[in-house]
Amino acid sequence: MKKGGDRLKTYKYRLYPTKAQKQNLDENLNLCRVLYNTALSQRKTAYRQQRISLNYYDQASELKEVKECLPEYKYIHSQVLQDVLKRVDKAFQNFFRRVKLGEKPGYPRFKGYGWYDSFTYPQSGFSLSDNSKGNQRLKLSKIGSIKIKLHRAIKGKIKTCTIKREFNNWYVCLSCEAEHELLPKTHKSVGVDVGIEKYAALSDGILIENPKFLRKSESKLKHEQRCLSRKKKGSYSRIKQRQRLAKLHHKIKNQRNDFLHKESRKLVKNYDVIVLEDLRVKNMVKNHHLAKSISDAAWAKFTEYLSYKAESAGKKVVFVNPRNTSQICSKCGETVKKSLSIRVHKCPSCGLILDRDVNAAINILRLGTSPGGATALAG
Image 1 (cartoon, rainbow, N blue to C red):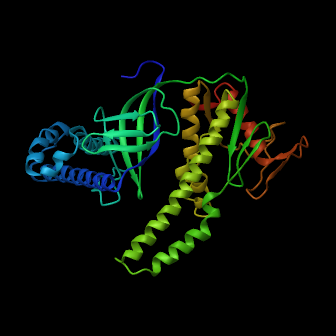
Image 2: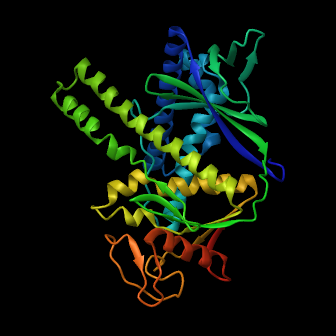
Image 3: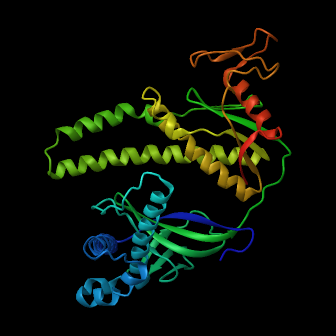
């Protein structure tokens, strides 16, 4: 149980396994994937043939027999195998929850190679060591001691250890129970209007440029995709080219996440109250003309990062209805209709001339700080 004021924080570090350790990790991951698929198949068969709904405890009780029949599973930590079955159970619980809520059910799927990329030590079976020479190691039960690069200090008590494969690299994600790190109060509030031309405009006039990582890498992506299409299916060269393309996509993802982390941290550090539009991004990407640009901006992820950082720092994030925030004059309240192509707000009533997005950000701040203006709170 978490104590009051504590939160779960995850630290991700790069692992540097030897060739033999890489092979061992790959084998463990593949065996976990096979167990996941087998458990899923068992549940489907039991219900289809006998109308029996199996749960985690039914399947966990059979792990001893699995190890007797398949000796290779003896070389995997017991809690790792239990966690695989818990994943299956969680997948079914989420499925039934979505059915109950009337959402798209999404029945649990079998995991093909490449679609199951991690396994977890939920309580024990792992430890960190650091000798006098600075040779940091992660010791994993049934696998051995692996070199690790601890590029930042771990704060809090480690609860779980997840080993993850990303292409040919391996990482460890350590989930820790840590206290909130409150930041000093600035006594300042800000409205934030996210966009495509500029990533965000703040109510105090600051503009954040949109890096457009996907757009800037589009020519490289097209080149790599054309190379992939020319390769013979099933050939080794096609596998290498597919990995090259995937690596480029992964680089874009990392660039975007780094940008979102840095900008959200700046906002949390500089303001006590941050007001955002309550955007329905899933509906917005249905616009095929803007879908790629909206996905590249990753507004939903930016909001997620901002919310949890604000909660940890003792700051507040407020969400408001985005309707007409760009059309209303922030000075006199007059409605000034304008299309997306018009980037400057010019009010015929009061004469205010202002960047369209800054005008919207001021309206957003006013809505978030007025009684009844907020639709949701975080922090």
